[in-house]
Amino acid sequence: MTISSQMQEKIEKIEKLVQDGYTLKKTEYGFIDFRNSSGKPVSIFGAFKSPAGFSWIAFFFPFAVCTQIKEWSYFYINGCLFAIIAVVHGITSYDPNSAGATAIGVTYGYMFPYLRKIAKDNGVLENPKGKSIFVGILLSILSIIPSLIIDTFFGNF
Image (cartoon, rainbow, N blue to C red; front, side, top):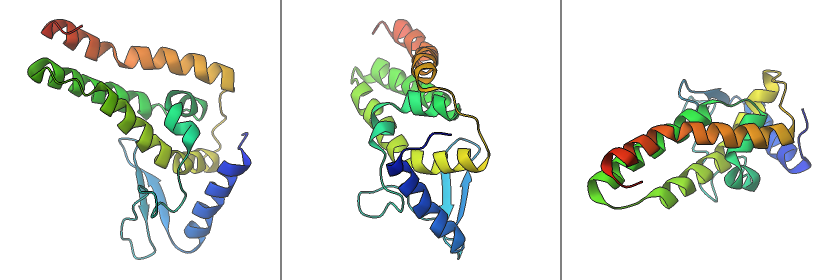
């Protein structure tokens, strides 16, 4: 698994905390459950309180990095979020697509170091970068088909 030096630093921060008794798991919906040695949830979000920091590459290209480490839950979350956005847009005429895309980017920007560590620990064989970009774009398009159907139903497409 090819890991950049910046990502390796983030993973090492997480590993140090795990050695100190923290636990790291992925929930059934693909989100991160990070807890301190007392079992109390630790926030991984926020500029000053995220233990591993933020991944800008995951912010701008979550579809590619999630495909690279085979984190398929990203596409379910993306599809569900944009289906909800399509319903909101259809009912209110307010279009929160930009806010939704930003929210996905921020979420995966913070979650990616933890997801990368979990993939590394599980021995996931990553996809090549070029393939990850291509497949990630295709899966992103597939994941938003329900929102396109909803938009068509409401006449907003």
